Length: 155
Image 1: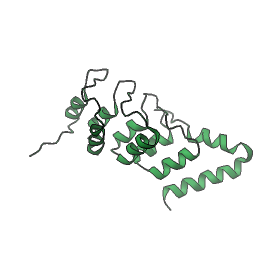
Image 2 (image 1 turned 90 degrees about the vertical axis):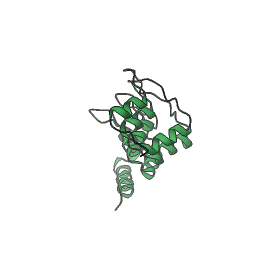
Image 3 (image 1 turned 135 degrees about the horizontal axis):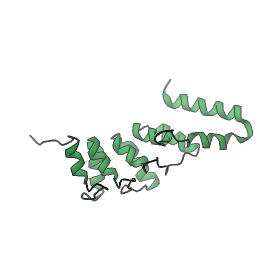
Image 4 (image 1 turned 180 degrees about the vertical axis):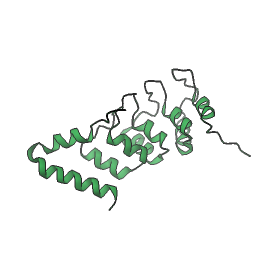
């Protein structure tokens, strides 16, 4: 059984058991943040690129604009995981900001370069994102790519 079916069964079972207040309880549950970092289920689904689960979470009122304790949103997560499917989904369907910054002023391009997320980098560059934005430490996406060893040589 795939993860979408498991989640669907779980959510339907919760509805049955909770009765009248089920929708509000499920909405609270899908938007619950992890203890240490403050990630929600939609953050993790975006990182994994699972569009079916993202759609199911949205159906149950998951907050697509949720940010974690460090200001990281679903676009940042898609770029960290190099999940072009998530990046395109949130950009095209919800017109989410591909220039957003977290609390350290890191953009999705910063995260993509730091993690060597080549497909995400190419997609972001096709939208003419700013290449020289500096984070709080003065680092650009290129700095992060070099510092993390995520550079490719043409030869």
